[in-house]
Image (cartoon, rainbow, N blue to C red; front, side, top):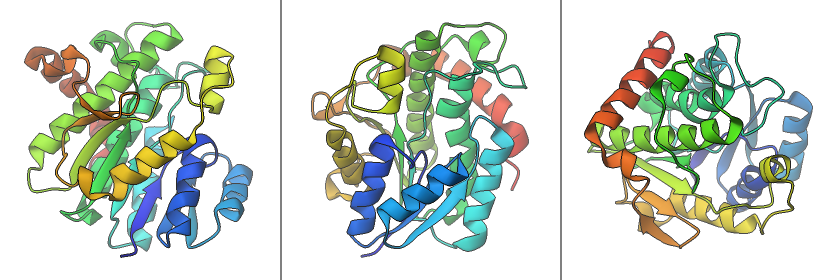
Length: 264
C-alpha cells in the first residue's frame, strides 16, 4: 500500500538515502530541506512521487509553517520521519536566545509533530531520530538560560527528543505509533565528518532502520520504545528518561517553548 511520508533533513546523508529507498518502493515522499537548490537536487536524485518542502528548522515559526503547508496539500500523512538534526552550526544560538541544537533536534520536531497530528491516522507513525549520545537535560540550558558546549547540547537534545517521544506515546495510546531510533553511531554523514573529522560507517544501515521503523510490522506495536541500531534491538534509553521528575521538568520546558506554535 502506498504511503505518504514526510522526511525532514532529506537533502543528504541517511535522509537522502532513506528517501530514495521509500520512493523506489512507490511511496509518495515529501522531502524537506532548508536550502532550495539542494532540495531540488535531492528531488531530482530521488525521483518517483516526490514533493519538496522548504523550511529552516532553527526557526519554530518555519516548523509550524511547514506543518501547515503539508496539511494544506494532504489530508492524510501516514508517516513523519523527524530526521533533521544539527551538531555544529555557524551560529549556536538563535535570535530567541536558544541553543540551536535544542531547537532543531528537539523543539522543531515537537512543533511539527503536534501540528501534523490531526492528519496522521491511528495506524500512522512518527519516527524520531535519536542517538546513542544521550545525557540528562539541563533544563536551564534548554530554556536558553545557560550555554553548553556543542556535544553536551547535542546529547541532551537527543535525550529530550526521546523523552517527548515516549510521553507522546503515553498521551496517544490509540495511535499513532511514536518511535525513537538511534540509526547507528558515527555513520558517514556530513554531521559526523564536521563533528568528529572522520569518514564514518556505511550510512545504508541507518537508512534501512528508518525504513523499517516507518513501515515494517516489527514496529507496529512499539509505540514509546527506543530502538538502538548499534545493537540491533529495542533497548532502554538513558536512565534519566525513566526518572518521573526529570521527565516532567523536561516536558514542561518543551511545552512552554513550543506553546506559541501549537495553536492550530
